[in-house]
Image (cartoon, rainbow, N blue to C red):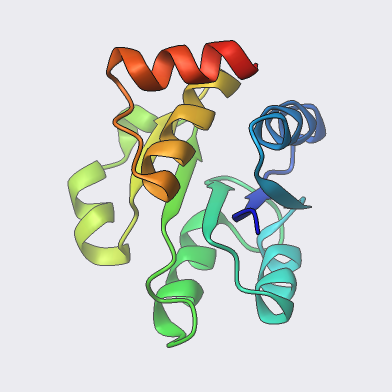
Amino acid sequence: MSKLVLLCDDELPILRAVEFKLKKVGFSVKIAQNGEAAWSIIQESVPDLIVSDYQMPVLDGLELAKRVRQNPNTQRVPFILLTGKGFELDHEELRLRLGITRVLSKPFSPRELVEHAMQILQGAPCGDESCTQEVAQTI
């Protein structure tokens, strides 16, 4: 059974591009356009990885991360935060306070996100040549 990734971003083109790339390498993907919709999906089926934008309507990425960490069923789910405000966020504080696994600044390459997902979920040594080649061959 493939790993389930929940993508949450209010920018539909980003969602669709990343969804396509993740599916191409074998992940199952669910998408949401705001944090509240993502939280509803999480209540139905706990994903193996959450990828969420920081700035979104209704419920932002940090509030979603707080909910995820406060729930015993989801508190250990890896969480990648996407942000256009990467320079304003203290990555170490986010890791310690909210258990954010990674912070990726926009704009980012969908390939880069796939590499991070593979590293987190499959233990692939991303950043080295083997993971990059595997992603390049499938994307």
